[in-house]
Image (cartoon, rainbow, N blue to C red):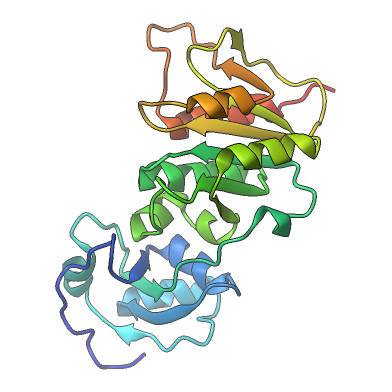
Length: 250
């Protein structure tokens, strides 16, 4: 490890500044991703030992830093575990790069990076081929998103599309069922009876799915919840929807 201490900097702006990923799981996934362009690895001595226990450093020469310096750089709310990696945003895919997708998660203008990160993590757990977002009204890649994804940002392709309606129509033309979720839908979600190719579509916090998105889905369904609260945070809804929609009966 270089003995040059990481110089103190003003807290960076995640909306305009460089991308810093932080936390051991997140940084490990980024180091293991051959498509990830990495710039600088900042680590405390203890964090570096833990990081090396899980794999190599992908040719990176770490710069020694301190927890206080990382707090100053990332903000005191960042749970960095003593390690941060400056990177270029992850390489984005196009839908044509995903060969014969079986399961997709589509987000209609979901803007909260915590939610997008959590959905990426859930999508990874359920074996989704990709998460699709709109090019506009979706969050920039940040350490917050990556931390919430717990490494999934470097494991699940994140695809941006300019026209979500056209994308949904293309998926349907290709034989994929596109299931839209809305708390006011007349039909409730039931376990599927076949392993048909599936895309689930979830709407923005508060607003839900846009009207054209609703019209283009193969079917609109709701999560059938007996309690007095009928809507969930979109990341929680994604987890339930993926479980229910993929639990096909034999």
